[in-house]
Image 1 (tube, rainbow, N blue to C red):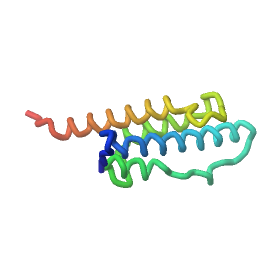
Image 2 (cartoon, rainbow, N blue to C red; image 1 turned 120 degrees about the vertical axis):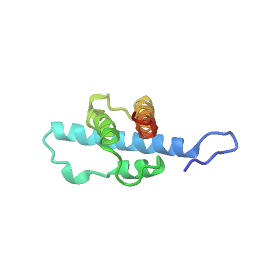
Image 3 (cartoon, rainbow, N blue to C red; image 1 turned 90 degrees about the vertical axis):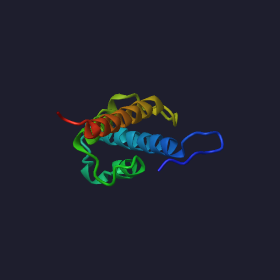
Image 4 (cartoon, rainbow, N blue to C red; image 1 turned 30 degrees about the horizontal axis):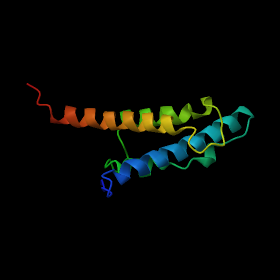
Length: 115
């Protein structure tokens, strides 16, 4: 589901990174609220479902993909809170790169013939 713009950039990549960034910021807020004993379980927004769909994985990505994504979310609160909108941009890009690598590895393993 890749769309190419006039500049040749993939729209889906930009959208995915923006969604990851939003989920990181959301989980950064929740993680810091947990530090002050605020119960946050009911505030999950499950953006990973939209991200998985944009990456062509359907609603339920495999366990390795989800572990990578979830690990980034669980550690979002460890990054300094900032009012700068791009403060977690490099983290979102790293997450995206690892998710893509995970998909690439899985696709490769599914095409390798066992002798």
